[in-house]
Image 1 (cartoon, helix red, strand yellow):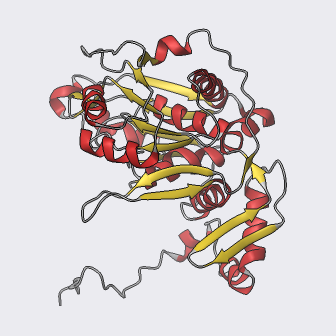
Image 2 (cartoon, rainbow, N blue to C red; image 1 turned 90 degrees about the vertical axis):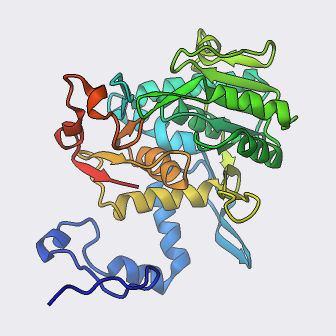
Length: 364
């Protein structure tokens, strides 16, 4: 007799329980967590928020719920960058690796929490130097390189909201998102490697700004692939030049729990892209908690890889914010999971790389 198949993709009633001995080792191995949440949801989330995050000022109201609007942890102040970086460094874990990064051509970087904090603080000062203030919005259109995470965290450090635009999107998509969010800055790269060759990014930004998005005043460019690009005087700035000599002294600002953290737009497949707003306290509580318990994370020993792109919400949550809030070590890979192809590998068989160096893999 053959196994039953899924006849309707949106209706699936079968369950697949894990082996009992495997389940017994999980961080959550019984129903007590579910029962606690069901009995008093606000008390449950208040406990999780206080145990998971560091708050500068405690909140006085867990949730204000007026359909369709919700406000979480009202009255509390915190900072995402502080929770992802400073508190780990202050606890003596600055030498712990935050990211193992590998570029598609095989170049690698290992970045500790202390090094990441230094880069984030310096780029936050770069943003200030370009006139960015709390409440402003910036667009980020970059490949999967460490500077992408640095840019996001630098925004959170000073209360600037980011809108990450997937690197495969067109100039029209950049215009739509920058105009809707009233972005003052675009952070990009000359190009990023994809399937063995540079994929242009800066020319798409140039085309977008020629067509619209008049609110954009400056463009910061990472020289990733050393391609020949145009740099517009007084508008375009090289990342490495702005970062040279800038101070790493940039304290994390205490931000309201409901401060806008980021905008992420729907794809626009069926209608005009819609900007989904994520605020600070509720979002970070959720992604830090779910990253820990859903993926059964042991940050002391696990090396974690989410193979999604940071341009999607999975990448925001489970490459950048969730893993760093939990103080774990993650892998970022620049290209697609099936690249480099054999002809690009040479003698370095990176097909074996994940199983040799990862303890825990999540494919997004």
